[in-house]
Image (cartoon, rainbow, N blue to C red; front, side, top):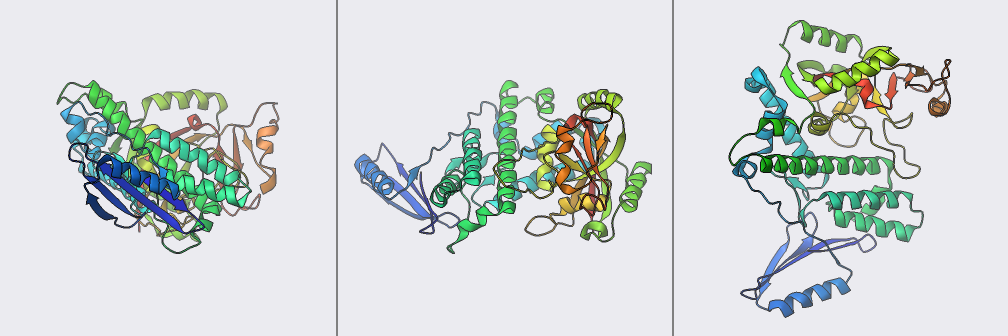
Length: 433
């Protein structure tokens, strides 16, 4: 597999060549990334095969390592769809037969796969078993790690020529449909697109990690048997449905309505279903911290549906800010996990309001107990770094930032914590118009 990405010449091409060592047949497929390739074959043998590779590399094509298919040693890992495995890992007891929970898990798995395909223009896909594929072969952890390093260099690079080369390398590792019109490279310099690419790489990493883990669990199990402990170990949470119209449902619906801002686009949404998330290990860690720093509050956290599989598997994650001069949407007060007392503010992240693309009406939010501890309250947007450099009135570090609506240059409430153990996610709330 060879790839040529040239931002100046508006090239984004692949060339795949395969030699059948027995017959001498050489199969070739080539074209622009994002379009169906042209296929040809001849009987030129190894000499023809090697000649094509030399020709293409002289023109600037680069070889791309293709990952081998993972060795699958059990029928279960070969035949089980990712949704079936997720249902086994995320449910227990009565929840396993609850159709609302089963439907939720199936939709979460599908939207993760759909989002990967959409962002890459169909060039990266997630199959039913969870394998993440590109036209260049399977995506691996090493290729994702390299792509992250290249994106960091692209972000920090000031020289235009070297910057273009880093982008070309990045698109070789993470092929995407950039379209046919010249000038597409300028899009990647925008802060919102860089943030989108970083989120995308995390999503790819989560998908590959999930598939690798399920293969490992399946290989550890006996042939055709279901080792539920191994599968359950893949997930941080268990899910069970809250009765529609019951006391808990009414309380959360009332909280959503009473804390929304009618000026927000997401304020028109209503609570459709509520699911309880159970994490005994995380709950013990949270209690220990909450008992120490106190000041518990119940806050909202909005996230796109495509992130839910990762959250249910590994929990909430605080991505580091990488590169220089990049302002990632929703991170006005530095790195951290952002929450809000205003339901509609958090719901805006769930609908995709702050990012390019179609806004969702059927979406999800998390409702969590948060140990805020000692709060730093910035007087202006620019003084938030003092939360890290100064001490509270007792000479101890601050535990969080709390920005009231209408202060420090913001219209809406912002709460930021730096330790995910200060957050105990209680409910997954489904919203709809």
